Image (cartoon, rainbow, N blue to C red):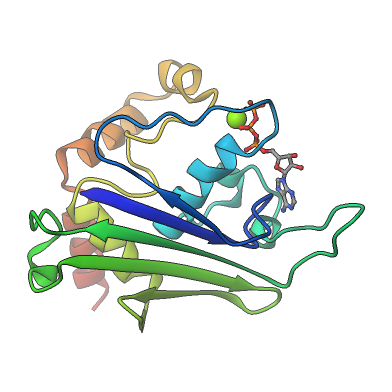
Length: 183
Ligand code: ATP
Ligand code: MG
């Protein structure tokens, strides 16, 4: 899956609308400590359906909303949009008629998150499945947090197996089996 753009507004330190254009090839994000490099990766993980605030370095889901600074008031909502280039049809077959796919997630204080795919409101599950079927997503082994390598080395075999399964692209099948068993 090719990511074209990441748009943030009110998300963590990105209070003003920010449009990050991701060119083909390797992209490096550089800047001094605390400038928001990790926040960008967290925005990516969040829009893909991350629902553990611990993985977002927070103590609650609303911690992703700009909390205010000495000079600026806090915001009431945060929004992240990810624009995916589907020209090579690398997204799941259900999206074959879409040249680009726009996935967005918005959170409002005391209201929780809403997700949209190409403007249509969907469940968190639908967003998670879109990425799981393409072997990516919030828990993709392609996204490595600071300190995660040490955690991987010391993790139990069952957890290491989950990482391999995610990389092999079968996590979406497990989710669907689980949903089928519930019916
Ligand atoms: P390092 O080089 O140390 O890894 P970094 O560039 O990865 O730094 P981040 O961890 O992405 O920096 O950014 C941390 C900054 O984001 C801190 O200044 C923190 O105050 C700010 N921040 C985090 N959450 C919020 C929030 N909800 N509202 C406002 N600012 C926030
Ligand atoms: Mg960092």
